[in-house]
Length: 202
Length: 139
Image (cartoon, rainbow over all chains, first blue to last red):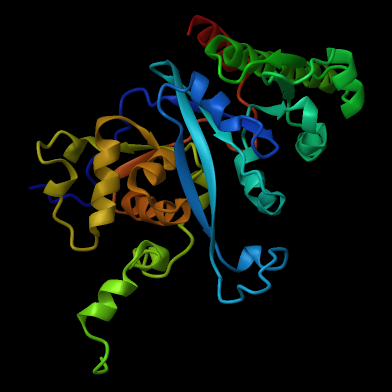
């Protein structure tokens, strides 16, 4: 038995790891969870948050007025880079009305992936806009679905009116190496942005 | 209970569509916010305090009437390795908000610590980013 309360030596356990997060955003069905699963060391897990009043002004609840809570799910994965360095990947909820959750997710994120499907490019406009406004470094990753027409990088960049410094990469969200390359691109971009900000501040 | 509310009715009522039998925030006695919630980010890592973590029975050796079974489940998950708030919520199938409140209680009572080396509003240091790139390439 352990009777423990307070005052029991608040020693810090040995070397707590540093935890970092990258967001994976994009339209519904674009492959966010697939990408997370391709590199995660665990099966993508799902956390749920109950929404009550917060969702009401915009949620269309006509006909289901009795429903006061709804559940928002976020899928996430984990990559242990070193014993003391852990990277979490969070797939953002797809529905627009849950964006207030993104603010919490985005806080402290080192960067983001915006996953795009060239057949439904408009689905990622909102995510691009969100990260641009908040100054969060992101890479636009085009998930090259089987059978989808390939478009050159420049065409995608123009269609989305991306800033020249935003990396655009072609990927296969199912492929581990490809997903790794996407993540490396995000972190490199975050590093470059950080260095640029530092230079500008001097 | 009325005369027609026998066992048959009850059995029909407790189905999946009816939702959880215990409302999630009943576990937190109605509280929806933890005391130091800003520290309890989704990736805040919860670490068990050493004085009980080594006990063979784990958190269930803790005798503390203020803690619920859910508190002990959380403490047990954090016993062997640091666990993020998100992982605890997924592991116990509890909403994130509920886990935050319960972890807040465990911190207050001195059973766990939360480590959050990078303040949420700041970016990680550049040398950390370089280590992440190296780590990803080496996977």
